[in-house]
Length: 607
Image (cartoon, rainbow, N blue to C red; front, side):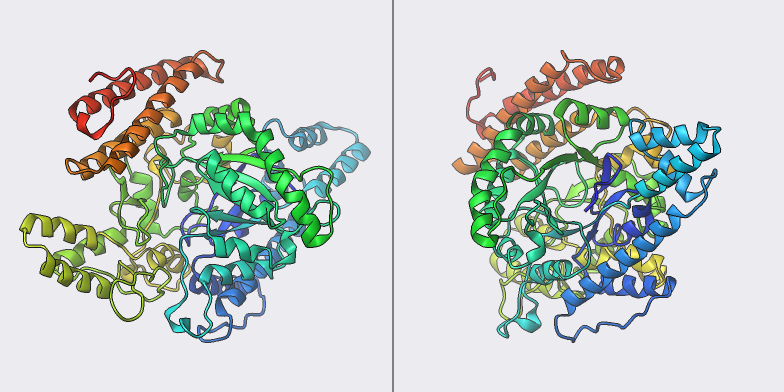
């Protein structure tokens, strides 16, 4: 498994937006992540690319044995085969302006040794020296990693398999990856899943060999240090090494959000920085004997552990600050790539709406059937159709895939809370139980806000590749708040140049620093949670809100301390940052005064 030459990766974006991203960007050395959440979509996209590249294609039907795993393996093997071919062809191209080979080196970060070697080659006037340098450069070309993602909470046994030896769908997706020819990483997101984590140890490719190398690696997406330690220990005790902790902001992200109790990204990364060595030492203490017991392999030193960060990064200065200040090994840029058709797969209507989106066009909603907060573009086709159905008195969605059908409130097979069937039954139940009209209306609003994500998040790709007419499609899209600050659709080259600070014309208006944006999101989230619970909250809720506010105030103090440090491009940033911190503190303390009964007294807070 080779390391990729870029300092950023493209995280998973929904089920469809990065479904084929490696086929678009891997040959340029850019790592990206494919979702394994929708095997029906995977199968359709496999058929599309097999035809496009002249590969044999035998469809895998819904009713065949082990469908999900086999579809996953077949698609990932095809992606690897095509990327390998693309890379071979790229290596053979001439070193001339406009060729993909030249673009490969020109897009590298400015501090890349390969970029400097390419510049020396281009400047050389000696034919033999130039030829030798070109040969070395061609050998140095490596594709970006083709990683995959399983959202651990999107887990169920299909209704058709219940009671018949069926298995959780995440296990089939894991097996599909494990049986593929990829040498890459599995990204687990959304928290721990014990039966899924236990299944990893059944696949030999996840264990290291005597040289400390594994064919397939584990990446954990986490939002705090404690989660990283707990989950890392679970794997270490099984003889499995976690190769990367991908730290994501709990709120300044896209898709499902998993808010911390007010613990901001900056202090979280500070903890990882200060305790990184201790984390590795603790995990290796558990891992070393487990690996010996499982495989008879004894390592004298722990394998490498990468630490990366993602969530709301929007400028080269922010990216550089994260890497230099916290010593992280790379960054994730997700939402901005939704505006790069050369990298992601978005239908034309949704793409135009994303480009035009402002701060009020994206919101943290309750539309996810999983119950986690979910960022959504409010005027997407999915949201427009959902609201139209409610207005017609027929809320809910068809449930053709059933990936999130795990609610068992009613007799019969489990249901998805976004489905017609569930919402009809639930509304009838509420009408029989709640007499107060206002309370009933609020309860029904919470029911009908759910949307079909497992289908709609993949529809943009189906439209793009002609499997579904645009007129009948209802694509959903899940950008983070960062989308509001990116002004237009752009090329891959333009976005990479933006990330590395070679251009700065993609942003619109005045954009606050990512840490300030996250603070504002957390303050708004706390206010919303208190308002939902007020005035009849219990002691457990009060304790949570108290801890949340304490952490936010500590975060503000932490950021004030950062202002005394040297920042890249700091002069203009620091003034706005200082003002933003003071504004957040004032808003927080004012809110505490007005809703004092929601919080226990805090040190330094007016009573």
